[in-house]
Amino acid sequence: GTIPGHFIGRSWIVFKCEIRAWLLTRRNTPTGEAVETDPLAGWPDELRMGELVQFFGKTKQTIRRWLEHGDIPGYRINGRWITYASELRESLAASSNQRPS
Image (tube, helix red, strand yellow):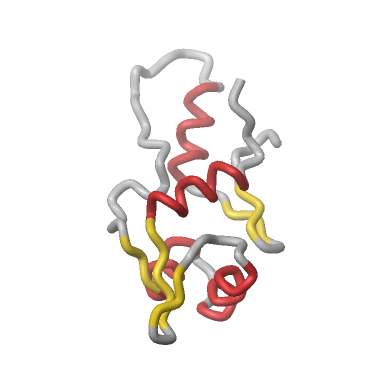
């Protein structure tokens, strides 16, 4: 629970923006720098399989397994998966090893 991460399926996912923000909280001298902590910032509201593969850095098979098992939220429409960023954001919050203080 020291380094921020998310346990999804059987994998730990670590996002660079969360690591940078965490490191800033441990710096001995403040920088005044603000880091975006939302890993989904800049991503579209609707994420399809290719975007999920890129976002998580996992294979298509892993993402499909997560979707089929409900590890991440999604909708199967005409044989294709779609995930909404707002729902994925909630899922990431629930899978985080960091608890609000």
